[in-house]
Amino acid sequence: MAKTNIVAGLDVGSEKLTAVAAVQDFETNTLQILAGRSIACTGVRGGVVSDIRKTSAAVSYLLGGIERDIGKNIGTLLVGVRGAHLESFCNHGTYNISRMDKEITQTDMELAVENAKAMPIKNDNEIVNVITQGFSIDKQRGINNPEGMEGSLLEVDVHITTGSSTHLNNLAKAIQRPGYKIDNMFYGLVPLGESVLTPEEKEIGSMIIDFGGETMSVGLYINGILKFSHDIPYGCDLITSDLSRLLHTSRQHAREIKEKYGVAFPTFLDEEGEVSVTSLDGRSTHNITKSYILDIIQPRVEELFEQIQRCVAASGYKDSAVVGVLTGGGSQMPGMTDQAVNILGLKEVRRGVVPRDLVTAPDEFFDPVYSTALSLVLYDSNNVDYDDYARDNYTKGASVFGKLGRFLKGWDIFGG
Image 1 (tube, one colour):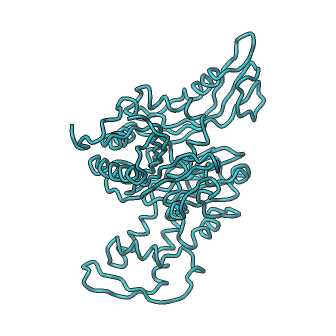
Image 2 (cartoon, helix red, strand yellow):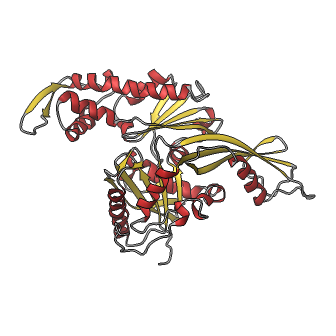
Image 3 (cartoon, helix red, strand yellow):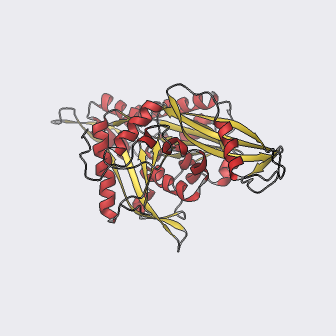
């Protein structure tokens, strides 16, 4: 079937898959979100596939439902990944222009990036994406696009994300089994940071934290570019587990209590009162105070921020961030920004979502649950650099992304 101009962003989270489908609206110069869904997926834990059959079924249900909603097939599929197996680095590459005319070409730029990619990585790892951060010509820095300019020495700074080939291949298989082809894959924090941070925040020094259920993604922007990123294998599901254990109730009911009554800082406890809790057997109830819920949640939230503090301290960029932006579902709990200021020592912290002037969409898609999926399609529309420098990883047979084509629609997703 002919490829359409429908672009979909698929965010692989913690026991959850979220996707949106978009098309470019040339009249408003924005992306128009046509449809989107978020579903539970018990086949994925912390961004890693734990059951390929369940994950494939969820992908089929999610993307198939979106295609039915819009009445068209997805033309381009972008996947955002996360997980503790991901590692990110900044590196530097150089290339000497030996031709007489000294005019820099696109090929010269690609060769400089290839040299920057030539760094040792773990045996079972592969490069997920390479993001160019800026070029230099004959030691003159701050050049965004050197093509057509003259020089003898071309240098480039890049941000490289690597991940476990095993985990990435398993995810690719799960997505491709029901017939979908991955056009590109990104570490989800990269497009997210580009969407929710302002240029001024990135320039003065900012920290972005994406609170997931089983992971927390942390990124540091300094002088306008991403200098450090890391996934911590803990998330806000720990709060749910604490509530479930200490209140003697199911995880589902504990999650509902967290979302309805949970606060992370004492000043957000608006009034004292009692909350009815259904016991584990589902047959009886007991009452607890709202302050007791705070007593359970606050220490765990502080521990999560302390984990982030240790991660940043080990990055080599301690005290570089001035402001912070919190995103993801866990960021919506009242008091999270106050805890970030207190523990991380930031001057100002806000919640971040995709700006409304960048996309045309119903209000429901500006919920933090859709932020990474929206960021993926925005990143695809606004950037072309990754096409030349990272996409080879998936289209030239280096991994399963290039080896597996798109199967015919309608095949049994669990078939051989």
